[in-house]
Structure formats: structure tokens, C-alpha cells
Length: 444
Image 1 (cartoon, helix red, strand yellow):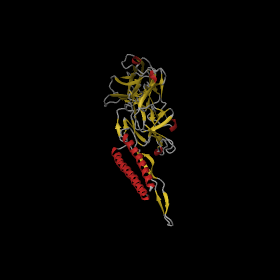
Image 2 (cartoon, helix red, strand yellow):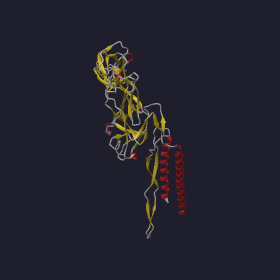
Image 3 (spheres, one colour):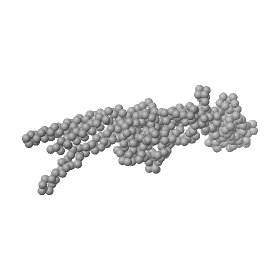
Image 4 (cartoon, helix red, strand yellow):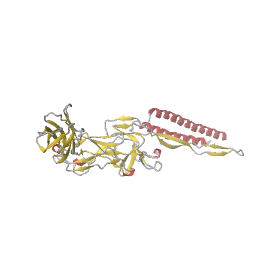
């Protein structure tokens, strides 16, 4: 009879723990990326009672206990944010954050920036590290395709008073994640420049016709000084014409865009066959303020032609890219950090790491929506595709945050059930107590 008393007490204690878990879930309804828990109970080992010579035995349980609290890692709803550095994971995985060489994992992507100078005393060398609200650094893979150049003219020396900026050395569109153990802090240079790529090739197209009149075709040519110059070809029919076809005298010039400075002038000749296809052109290259630029009129009918009966036309195409300065950063669904520049170009500079575990339920909850690995969870790892390349394994949503997955309706329902169970166990205790009192009275 006394065993019922102790079983009732264990039931009270177990349901008390259960209510604690429910209360914690409800308290974190508005906590970003909070993952609710479920209390799991188990019975305490039984006592075997012998019933004499009968072949059966009777077991009487010793009550219940809290077996475990399991995490509920179901996806929380995504809430839009107006900051690109707010991140949410859609799918499985965790962000990795570090502080004093201690690594933690979280689903909470409400990140901010911590700015510091890579070169002490040089404000232009500032970079912004992605951090959590309590100062932990978000980890990932940074590319080495940019470096600080203290002498680089960012184009704002009048307002800034000093040169210096980070410069992209090799534009990239993708970032391969390095090994799990080599992930570092994510850094965003405050001043990042896309270097000028001078024009090295110009191609011309069109029809000069056969009438003796001056024809002009121009092309833009970007110099190594990041200036857009003008390469112009002027065609005038030669005084002496071949027996078949047409010959044009060509004056090629490279000038500044306003024409005030002349960088190169060359005279040549373009000869077209009887069918109007280009046979030869004597000018092969021009000097664009120190950079040689190949001049291509095509071959046959693929470039410039000289035929009758078709309208006169002219166009050109040039390679090269003007230099640009940073306009904004973005993070795409693969977690790749992309820099946008004023010249319309982009380049990746890093990638946010998304970690996974063999057993998420084995993680240790640290508080503050942080988890740490344990022997039960296993070490963090990256998922890989069929070719063995590390992938995020989840969609990274920039400008969004994951809401708590704790539900009010579930919590209130569980609370009612737990309350009823608690009351029932308390009734067990009072009933057993009354029975003990009755037994004692019978003894007297």
C-alpha cells in the first residue's frame, strides 16, 4: 500500500517536470528560431511479488520518471526582414558561431556587423565581421580573391582624404566550402573595388556601300586608367581602285572621349573583293593610352563589307570592363556572399557555412538558442552531393528570420493534460494516506 504513495509522488514529480517543459515552450513563443521540446516519460523498474506455488509472477511498478526531453526541429515559419544580414535556414542544418575558440551552433540568424581595421590606424582597411547579437562570430569560407591595396585610388580622395581599398584580383561566381575544421570568420570589406580590365580587342561590323563618301565607325576602348576612350575608323575611297572590288583608305585614331587628347593615329587601307567581302586590312593594332588594342574588321562577310544594294551601316563590339566600386552586398540561397559593383559586375567573396550532425537529438542545449556537439550528436559535418562536393544542404534566406516553432494551441492542450495527470496523482497520494490511516485505526 505504501508503494502507491511513492508512485503518486513520482507521478507528481514527473508531471511537474513536464509542466516545466511546456512552460518553457510557451515562454519562447516569440524567440527567434527557438525549437520546442517534448517531455518523454518512462516507468520505474517493477517489483516482483511471488504468489506462492503458482507459476506466474506479479509485477508492481514503482511509478514514473522523466526519461528525456527531445527537441522538435520542425521548420519554423519565415518572417521577412529589411536587413540582408538577417538569415534564415529553410531545411536542415545550423549556423556555426565562435567565441574564444568555442564553437556553438544555432538556427537564429539575426546577425549584425562588428567593424574593425585590418591595418591598425588605416580606416580604409576596415572590414565588417558578421556576428550574433551577443558578439559570437559567424563562420564560413572566405575566398582569397581580394586583398588590401593601401595605394589604390577608390575615387573619393577629395571627400575621404586618403587612398586605400580592397581590390578584387579574380572575380568569382562560386565558392567551394573548405573543410569543416578550417572554417573562419566571415568578413565584409567596407571598401571593395572591381579592377579595370583594359580593352584589348575591338571588332567592327557594317556595310560601307560602294558610293565615294566618308564612312565612320567608332568603338569604346577602356584604358588601364579606367577611362573610356574612343577608337574611330574613318573610311574614304582610295584614289586608285583595283580592277575588281573596292579599296578604302582608313584613318584610325584613339582619342579621349571628348576628343581633346589623341593617343594614337594610323593610316591604312581596307580592300574588298568584287563580291564585297573583305580581302585585306593593314591596321592590326592601336595604342590606347599605353594598352595595345587589336582592331578586327572580320573575314569575308563576318565583319565589315562593301557591297551595293544594301543600306550603309556600322557597329562595333569591345571587350574590357570599367573599374567599379562596391554598391552593396548580398547573400544568395546557397549562402554565397556576393558583392555588387557600380560597373554592373559582381563577384563572390565568401560563403556562409551550414553544419549538420548525424544525430540532432544528441546536441546539448546551451541556452540562447545555442547548441553544442556531444558524443551522442557526433562531430559537425557538411552534406555532399553525388560528386562529393560540400553543399549547404539547406536554403539560406537572406532578409528573413525563422520564427519559433512552439505553438500556443499545443502548449495549452498539453498543459491541461498535465494538470489533470498531476491532480490524479495527488488524489492517489491522499487516497493511500486515508487507507493507511484506516489500517492504523483497525490496529487499535
